[in-house]
Length: 81
Image (cartoon, rainbow, N blue to C red; front, side, top):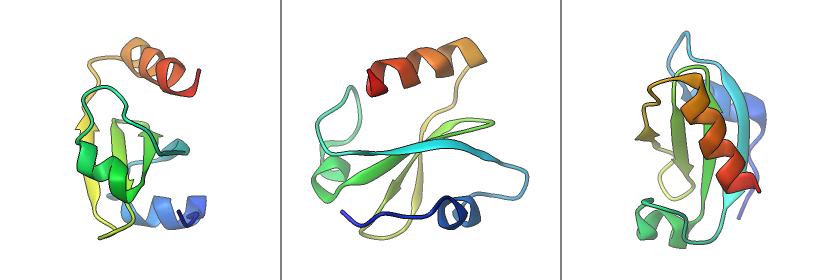
């Protein structure tokens, strides 16, 4: 899978949304659509939500709209652990 720069990912986000961390996912993970993982995707944490960037179409797909920051940190700990 190609790598994307933080600047490239930031440019794909709406104005006012800030990229905090991003990492590639190459294996089945929780409720993510399996097709996204077959193509390879990057999971990113922003100041508002958790999103996936897929390489096949460059589209930003919303995965989770967190209810609070604790939920976001639990998700990140689970996938990076």
